[in-house]
Length: 432
Image 1 (cartoon, one colour):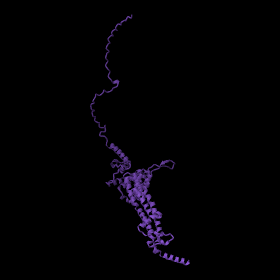
Image 2 (tube, one colour):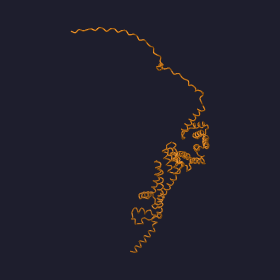
Image 3 (cartoon, helix red, strand yellow):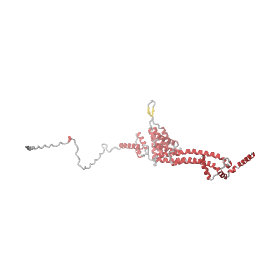
Image 4 (cartoon, helix red, strand yellow):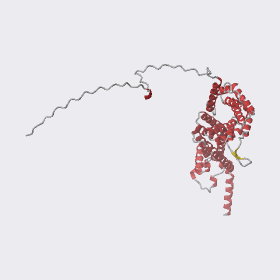
């Protein structure tokens, strides 16, 4: 009995030594499917030399799948921001499908489906772990590459949002710009136009937040819009208490606005922007200097803004600098008729307070004309010629006069009346 056990053990060891050889034989797999040996018969399932590294491939597959799930969790909400859309839905679904395909080996149903597909492709079983690992890492690389292209997609959404804003489709503009910022946060142009959308919606606080983000990211056009909102906020009356305990209205503090405008005007990249931006910056700074009663500085800024418009014929005509200059000259008691005239000639309905400026300019010019161009006669105005009225188709009635002014009516004597004839005699009737 002992000899038999020793002999079987020796044969078993010899069979194990042939395991690598047996594992390379493709016929064993066919025989195993036909005979269906028990799991204890290990020699029917010999290991291929490459199968010794299956644990490593499985571990690497798990690492790749973890990265895939993390990327899908990050990407899907980005595309769903700003409302549903076909492109946004595809951007959320495609990465999820790729991850599910790459991670199908984690479930029994998915593993069986994958193994059947590999069998149909004629791939040897000992390569399956390697293929699963490679596919998982391929999906991970695709997702990483897809995420690296998000800034380009964000720029496309920004262009769509800017076009919608210019077309005054504010709701669509807001959706496109919010999706652009969800895909790539570092998009100062999208932040700027989203601030303009909030500004049009009268959501000033949200507009300031977006303008500040764009300005801090170095987007120069945001400086003027931010300065306008800062100026409006600074001009809101605020109550305070003085040293005597009296409630007073605190003076307006423009320092933050002035600092912002001066920083923008000193930026070297200002020359690369459209001239309308420098015009707006100088005009706003001039307006603040007028409010601060620093008239000399105000005139310098306003005149530079006007010179900038004159030297750029292609620039959109604007009247605000002329109107502010006219107001400044009135405060200084200087002739302002020419400035008011240019203020009215360069009327632009898109400017803030354009209608108010046009009304004021027309009123001032009318007053100037009355002062400088009096009537031709200093004694009396030129009489207006009278035109005779056409004859009426019926005789005109006599004019009405009171009784005291009417002539007395003639007295006509009364005619004497003739005597009345006597009545006829009455007959008496005798009754029998």
